[in-house]
Length: 64
Image 1 (cartoon, one colour):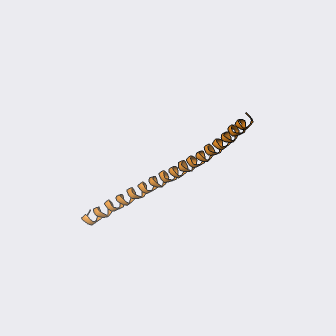
Image 2: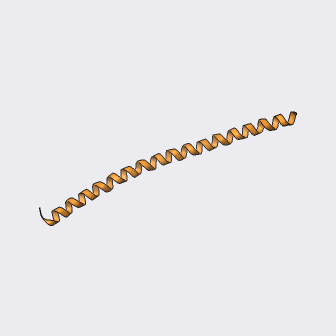
Image 3: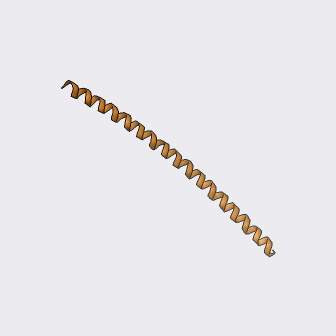
């Protein structure tokens, strides 16, 4: 095998490695996006619960 053939096979291996790493990073990005969306939804629910509890507390204080 000549020198240039060895270089080409090394380049092919490098390209396969880069493509595999890109796929892994794309999966991680999707997981992070899903996690951040769940976090934002949780904060909205927490805010809604806080508002309801504040309303109930104010209502009770109004009649005391």
